[in-house]
Structures are given as C-alpha cells and as structure tokens.
Image (cartoon, rainbow, N blue to C red; front, top):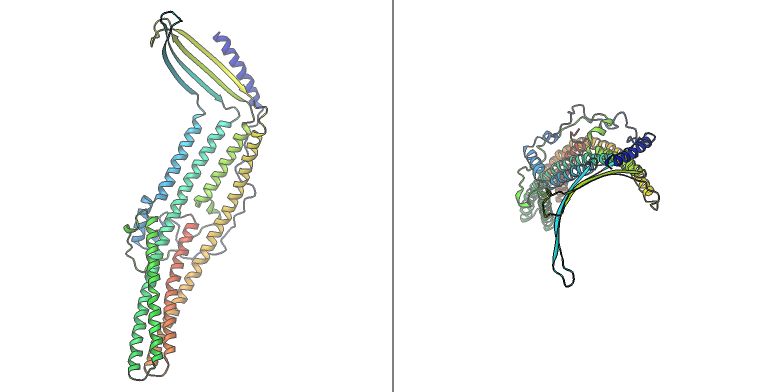
Length: 464
C-alpha cells in the first residue's frame, strides 16, 4: 500500500518538474526605467572652506548644550521609539513570510469514553484513544512564496531606512527649535535695550519740556515710542516659551523638564559642508533608499501575483495510532499511515487573480513615479539649501553694517536734539530704525543657521 502511494507521489512530482522547466521565472528588473538623470554638478557651489559631512554634524555648531539635547532626544523621543517598533514589526513579518517555505508539522492526541444505555437496558461503554502526526508542504515551483519572502525583506529594509529618516528629522527639529529659542532670546534682549534707550530719550525730552524748550507734543510722542517698544516684549516672551515647550516634546520630556541656558545665536558657529556630487544623494538619503526598497518590494509582489495564476502543488502526510483503551497505546493499537499529493489549478475566479496582477503592476509603476519624484525633490532640497546658505551669509554681513550705521545715526540724532539743532521726529526715526535693524539682524542670523540645518538634512545627515 505504502509503495503504491509513494509511486503516485513520485509520478505527480515528475510531471510538475517537467512543467516547471518550461516556465519563465524571471521577474521584471527592479531598476526603474525613465528615472531622472543626475546632473554632473550643483548649480549652487558650496564654500571653498567646506568640510566633509559627518554623522554627528550638529557638533559643528560649537554648542555643547545643543549636542546634549540631541543625544537625549535620540534616546527618549517617542518618535524614535515608534520607528523602532515599526522595524520590529517588519522583522516579525519577514519571519512569518519565511515560515511558509518550510513544512508544517502538527501533533494531535485525544482520549474519550462513551456511555450508552438502550431503552430498558443497562449502561455500557467503550473507550478510545488516538494520536496522530500530520505534515503538509507546498512546493514553491513558481516562486510565489519566495517572492512573498523577498517582498517582506525589502519592506523590512524600507522600514529601517524610514527609521533613519525619522532620526534625521528629529535631529534637525531639535537643532531648529534650539536656535529659535536662542534667536527669540536675542530679540528680547534687543527689545529691552531699545526700551532703555527710549526711556533715556524720554527723560531728556521731559527735562527739556520742564525747561520750556520742548512742547507737550514732544513728550507725548516719546512716551508713545516707549510704550510701543514695551508692548513688543510680551509677544516675544510668549513665543519663546511656546518654542521651548515644543522643543521639550521633541526631546521626549514634559514642558517643565527642559531648560535652555543659551541666550544668543551670535556665539554659534555656522559650519560649512561639502555637498559632494548630485549622484551621491542616491546613497546618502535614507528616504531615497526607502523609496527604492518599496519599489523592490512591489516588484516582488508582482512576481507573487503572477505565480498565483499557476498550479498549486501540495504534499501531505499523516501517521497515527488508535486504541480502545483510555490513554494507553501499548495494548495492540491500530496504526495508520497516509501520503498524498494534490494539484490545484485555478480555472475561473471571476477575474480576481488577473485583477491582483494588474493591481500589483500598477502599484509598481506608481512607486517608480514616487521614486523619480523623490530624486527630483532631493536635488531641489540641496540646491535650495546651498542657495540659502550663501545668500544669508552675505545678508548677515550687510545687515551688521546697517546696524552699525543705525547706532551712529541715533547717537548723532540725540546730540543734535539736545543742542536744539534737530527736532524730536529725527530722534524717533533713528530709534525706530535701530530697533528694526537689530531685530532684523537676529532673524537673519537664525535664517543662516536654519539654512545650514536644511543643507545637512538635504544631504542625508551623514547617513550612508
């Protein structure tokens, strides 16, 4: 009996293998056709004194406090925890997909006693026990299961790349938030300095009014200037606190648990980084690597959907023991053994299988477009950051000259007003010009630091 069953199984396998020899198992290439060509050089050139991009690029700003905040955020941020769990889930999915490549074994056992009593008779019973071992295995001749495993593996790689993207975004967010806090504190200091200047001029105007050399109109005008500068302080204080609270969330701490000791952005260095070649972005940016991995997973899904159109070959086997004694197989048990092979060829499914192939193919084409769009976006990010880095540096130099001249103008305006040469409107205009120039300089400095962060982020933050 066993010999006959084995012969049948061998015959079925022989026919299947012969059929597999004429089946084309080559899957489409994962290299996207029509991807944008990479330029040979950047349109915006970097500075001559640029340094190579490193993994801990934020230390180039010269702030130990910023480095400490980023190190703490990488450990405690919920975003990093979420990304890590996504990786663990993808690893589990790979194990689930890979398990189908191996035979499935199942062990079953049971025992029972049945009691019966015919009408008008007495009770009688019988015992039974059974134990069995069964095995099943699907032969992956067409590569459907292997394609599913490849899809899961590429999805895992994409998830790991996504974790690196989250890391880079988190680091850039902490650095940006830190610089915004320092910039707002600098603007607050400027506002308070200008308030002191306005109050000093008000004392001068008030003294001249008491001596009859200034009109009550001059006093009212300068008092209005003092109140205007004073009214500009509370909004800046509120913005500074809100930015600090947002920084705490990025760092994975409660708002009450984050303190920033720095007070100005002028003491920070602005590192310059060598952008390299545009083609380097394909290996530098984790988001591009993730898009490519998703594309490879979609390609494997197409192969699996096509293989589902072909016959399904399965092998089964079982062996068991049965006895009429409770939990006892030593008393002449009955033994059973079975081997089998089955072939299942879908004939009509209402277009479901063909639809799955079309769906997977369309999804692959979509991800090709996503990949191409991601490349174009990455190139634009770097060009924009390079342009901003150079132009904000020039703007900061010019704005510093504006501030210096505004200080000179205010000093001369006060002297000429004290001597009665000019009227108060000249002093008011000089005060307003200096305040705006200094506030603008603080914002330009922040924009320059932000442009540096954007460039590091656009280049991949040292990831490879």
